Length: 143
Image (cartoon, rainbow, N blue to C red; front, side):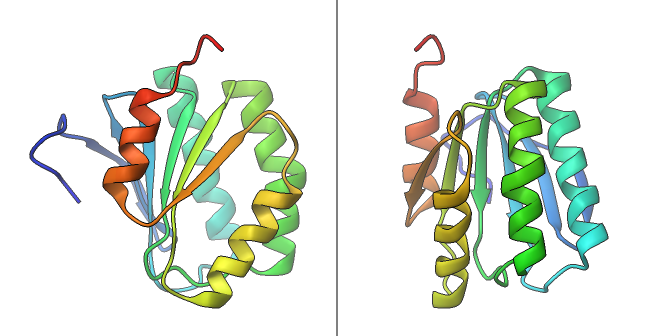
């Protein structure tokens, strides 16, 4: 979604999991596809998220879930046990805004990831992309 009030973003990567954008306002935006992607495709997508964060120096993530299917148990475990700690360690990830998906099962999956994640990444959940962007733009990385 490209809103007139914000700086145009750049598509960095896409695969069956979704599209990955860089928003010059200081964050990466994950726009998920509705189909459940195979685990290896999901891992490749997250590898690109990490690469984009490292190359731009951004420490903020906006994950737009939309119609995304719930993550499998192994994907949730990998995300909380491996990828999030790696993103905190290697890209200094600090803030993650989540725009809620429409599927109630997806919301439960998201809650499981948020509650199981290591400290160091601050999550906020939103109903709209505008609210998520406003929060990310307002957070102070010096704290």
